[in-house]
Length: 107
Image 1 (cartoon, rainbow, N blue to C red):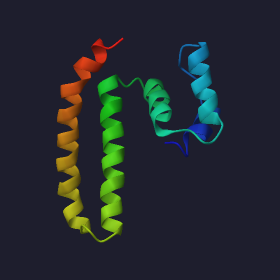
Image 2 (image 1 turned 30 degrees about the horizontal axis):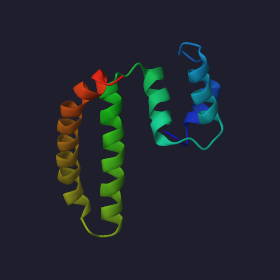
Image 3 (image 1 turned 45 degrees about the vertical axis):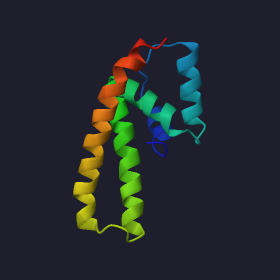
């Protein structure tokens, strides 16, 4: 997402409410060197995703990267990586569901 967000944002009309903070994030994405958190936040907002969906997307991306690195290092085989990623995704989803209500109460 970080690689394609600047090009995508330049070619698409923005559906976000126009305010100072939103514009700062969009400008950061357009600068070409965004971090994953603001990228996922902006892209999630543009796609209409809620907080749970964005958290699950972030967890999946991180788990996929870790499992992919393990495969490249020959720590795990390609076929073993599929159930491993599935198990990590289920664990991450449980953790997100456990923590999200507390995060929503935080100011």
